[in-house]
Length: 116
Image (cartoon, rainbow, N blue to C red; front, side, top):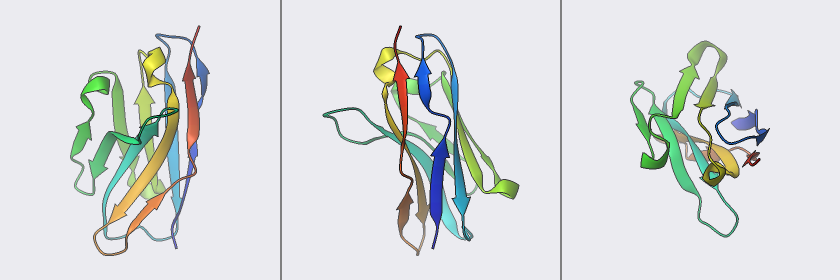
């Protein structure tokens, strides 16, 4: 069984930065990709950024150039560095882990609020 725990959310002013972390417990060998999704009130959950087991990254157009996804293989952790934050980035951010043959796992979410 795999568990994902996010941390690093909070309240920040527009233009500020936050760094989210996702720690995975249990074996994640054979995973396909890890990623960050976000869901604002009344909206669907959308992909923000993802990174494959091979290290390829993908970003939503709205965060390109501002967010950076990374992975620490030795610590089974994933990070999302968020810079130049905007009010429209306000959402609950979820960590996601996809396996080729073992299904998909989600974290419990961490709140990010961007407001002056």
